[in-house]
Length: 188
Image 1 (spheres, rainbow, N blue to C red):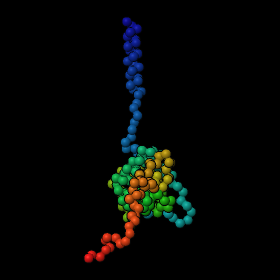
Image 2: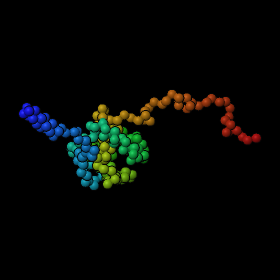
Image 3: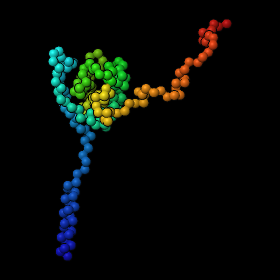
Image 4: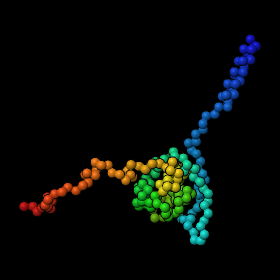
């Protein structure tokens, strides 16, 4: 009887310790990105004459997270960034797939461009987009020009691929016809 009590007490104590020591994985749905506090600069460009400026060291952790970069891609479409930047190839806004960027290509410069806007077209999204989404957008924008690891970067959309479906190329071939087209004939 005493042995049964001791075993029962030990079972309760060990199960209590197991319940206390077990922790579930904590998922941060609103993870604070690096330097999540707003960058309070009013300069339009970090470009300055003289020696090259050292890198400030701001690292966007989202650039190493495939899910965050794909969320940036989704947000790029959702906020209609492709309306001006034409899926990164440039339109009314500058292209995002090339190596030369007007206001810089470092993560904090892209963050600043999105938040503060730029003259002649880029609107300010300050207080309209949460910081973590701005950092996700910045990670995706950098992925378009190959500045993030290739295993993290999302694949290109089908509409951006260079191949055309074979069925559509036949429709594009001009038809051989002899003589004047009917639309150019004079009425009788």
